[in-house]
Image 1 (tube, rainbow, N blue to C red):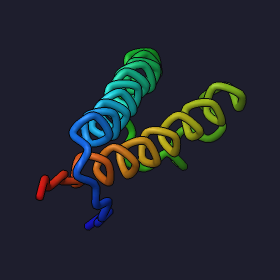
Image 2 (cartoon, rainbow, N blue to C red):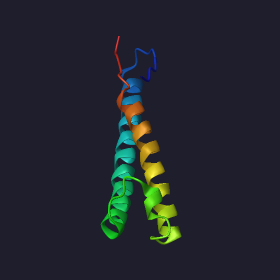
Image 3 (cartoon, rainbow, N blue to C red):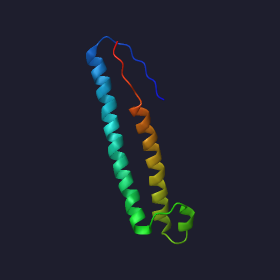
Image 4 (cartoon, rainbow, N blue to C red):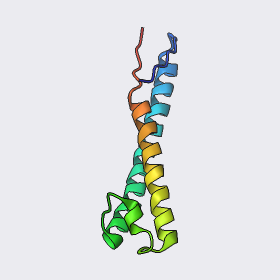
Length: 92
């Protein structure tokens, strides 16, 4: 869980922080969709493989490297998105 504590009595500041977090969430969601699209295209072309090592020697090495990179990117983006989505802003 991500916990960020910012104390302010200024509603404008709270709004700006909330907007910044929401903007970053939107960017991450768009990046996730784009990355998932790349992975989907690979899987349409080569099929879904639970074990990627089975594809070695059967798939162009550069395609396989790119696909593995996209899967890694997807995982990192999901972690970041989850972290930001956990943030709760409490006004006092």
